[in-house]
Length: 430
Ligand code: S3P
Image (cartoon, rainbow, N blue to C red; front, side, top):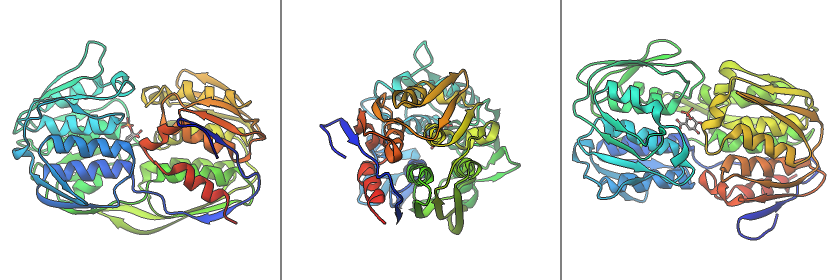
């Protein structure tokens, strides 16, 4: 791989490879560990924190609230001791930082305004309003429903029972963090397919209980200081899994990744397409399973991704399009309208990615279809400032006829700064 800053030219190996690779700590879990540590009075520690810019944004924002970070230690006065930030809290590109923090702030007496980069400032925040106002917080947005998000919280919050219309872990988590500060028990429900990391952790801390597959009850209480160990990020490992799936006989083994059921949709999709997928649970952190996953490539066939599976594959759907291009037949992804609300409009950016590389993709209102020809030609792709699009483009190079030029390749640093090096190491191992 080579190229000037921001532009990367990627040429795949075109032959099988095999390696074991430990991916960096999970982004979703890292945000949660930092925010819960900031809410807890005392010293927590967070081991194996995600290395990307999104989690750096959460670190920055909790510092603005008066939390001290010393290597892996998080020293906090607790949510009641948070100090008023002089400036708006800058969440950079990170939607999880903005939405989870908004939830935590709704149960604090520190009024704050949350802002982000040009991409985050375009993402929908109206979904926070109903759940957080049910808790008694005031939530102000710009007229088009985007950030700046100004939260004036209260302590205690009102208990509430809310039903969220989309399977969003971010909105569920935001509500739960605010509901921890309520005068009584609250519940949150939504359609299934969301990652339930927050809920498993709160349950393990005695701060909640799962009522059924979609409803979680929050018991109010103080978050304890804790020693978190972050599992590897399955959404990062997914790029390596996809690359192996494309080449018959290629194999990758990823130990210590989160095996939360809301993160495993992509493995189900790869299996349905004909790849060999093996998983073994090796432990759990606060009730959230971790384990080893291996993926071996094979001749692939098309599949359909819909309903709960689309929700549980949400961050990996650009990769589904890439893998589908190397399969035979028409792959359809539906019930995935949420893709339009990600770091880019990921229906549009995914379809553009495939078509720019000589594949055949078409948009639906709530997803896309990809005509699998068994190959991609290569070409030039714009990341649209979206880390997952830049990284999916690099994976597309695995078996492409010609090199792939990625414009805006540096976006990968949002979740995995050393991604291209890791992919290259995978490709060169036999
Ligand atoms: C996340 C939840 C998902 C996911 C995002 C991270 C989280 O978003 O797409 O990358 O950490 O809670 P939604 O809550 O919008 O579904």
